[in-house]
Image (tube, rainbow, N blue to C red; front, side, top):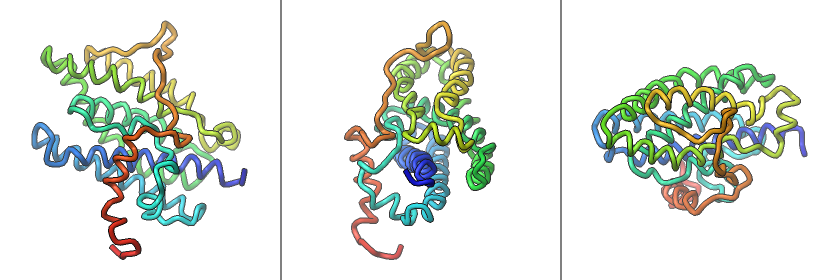
Length: 256
């Protein structure tokens, strides 16, 4: 394994997560249940895709791929996003729950990267954290309001959480180079981040009258939805990339 391979693996996973989730969020543009959320999720989608660009730029000198090539030319088997971000947008409750769980994971990930031994990661994390904090404030507020709203809204949020929580555990799937990243102080490892994430989300969900399956020690129950970090994706990623890459690939080599 080359000396840059662990960093490449981490950057690709983060960039692909942001790009694919941003695309899924953008599917609500013009279709969200109220105008305020139509605008909010369009802005979140734009931010997520913009954040993927930052990670793709850091990848370029390591891989030789421009950000456009990384996003629009690679086949699905080369993507390293978790499966969670590629699932269809579902109903609005699912989108809210997914974005909230992702936003909390981003908080623990970026906070950790702000203390990385890698200077470029530290600088990028410092830039992204304020924007991700705004995302979290919005989605956390939605979870709280909808969870404590009507019987119907709480029921739909709980149903969405029942589906999304095991999927979300896939965000913390270990990388093949994880031990090396930890040893070099670049990244603390997904096991540590998952513990912090669980500690953050449980009080919020409980306060919203929502619950997830954890044991007496706070460890999550259920089968994590793994495979994305090694390129074992569901057909939903193929569907998303077909849509995402269609315009770029309609005119190969064009300057946009």
